Image (tube, rainbow over all chains, first blue to last red; front, side, top):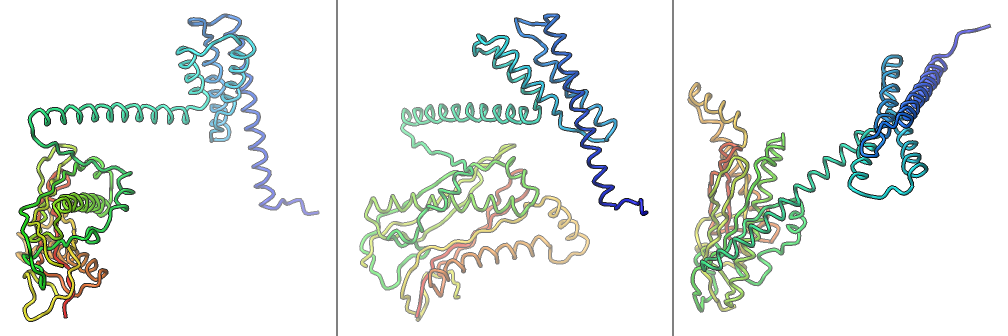
Length: 291
Length: 107
């Protein structure tokens, strides 16, 4: 009789054995966690009415489970007992034992701590994201206040207010919606005449400018130089098209149907450690020609 | 496709003006590459790598512009201008090469 086992069967047996071991570790972890919770409840281990067992029991359960798993099967099990203890303590502590407990800042902070003990990675991620969002909101509010103050200062001085364009991901969707500048019924030409057309009136110099604030920290994030360059190029092209669009509005307002000697100028007007500001100015002579 | 920096095409009849067409490219974002390029210039004394790359970048900008003109149905770009602008910054000596002109169709 052949007593040799098939390799696949051996592999399956090892897997089953490991699963069983994991189950034992989870159970041991849960038991330790429950014991710690019981000790905390019996000894009234409280701070401001909050039993520290809510934090200590999931922590100890997870620690014991992970320690055993690492020692005997050389891998972690995801601290399942910690999550079980979280559910047990919340159900017992918040619903069964103390149903009148209201929602207040202390409750919220304690809840975060409990959740953090049960699912550290997820909660840490949420906390970090929330912090970022809060900072972004503060930054946005600060910018809006600064913008409104700047506008008021310029209004008082009688100087025009120029907004610096800061591109973000959303602008790429706007970018696609920009109309083709040559489809607006105005001829944009770099030449000094339009062959075969009679210029009826010269309306004078027309100029449009925009400023592109380019975050170099964002650019440095790209490890690939090509990507870094293409991102900046896309931004430059977008701001240039927007400047041409602004120019077309000026021309339309004055009933021009063409602009000659068009000149596009790019100037770096400010270099800071983290960003640079590029001025994009377009200048030309507005005309009215006989179509 | 005919490229010219002049305002008209002598003895040619321009049938249609399509408007402005542009092409841009960036050069020199790699600080280390530029550094070694400089060393090579001194040692070998040949045409610099940087100069070659500048030519390539210009060609790229012009070809983008030509492509845009072709898509519109133009067969020439007149009043052609090419400009080089140093954007600087911590990205190194980044140079923006811009080519732009007026796309036209001539007989």
